[in-house]
Image (cartoon, rainbow, N blue to C red; front, side, top):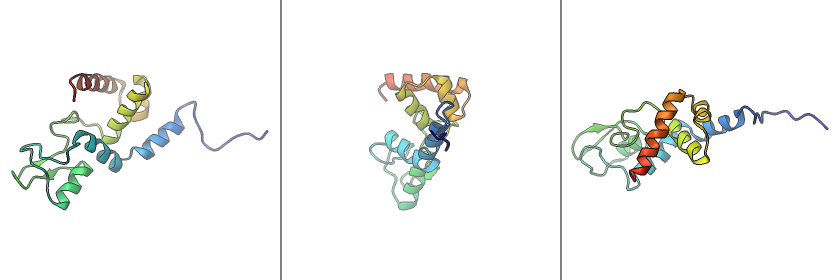
Length: 135
């Protein structure tokens, strides 16, 4: 029987890691995570008014700082969410959520995200608290 080659490095998680990083890229992860955090649509973190205008909306769903026409405030869509004041990417957050849902241990999540084990441990606690608070 011929020897199989071709990159299914399942033992080390290489295949899963490559797949996750292809699916959870910066642009698509930002949009998916923000749509979960803002199910009613894009709103200003300062005044709560809906974000209006093509450019401000595109910027918001991309996860970048945007501008509210109502109160003239510039803000990040992370403000007021579980991601406020954090430095992890939307893709890393999405991978953490996916891995928690799959029952992965913290060491595996650290490998999959490239984050330090202590950072992953803190995010596990933060997410568990966030879920128990009903957010």
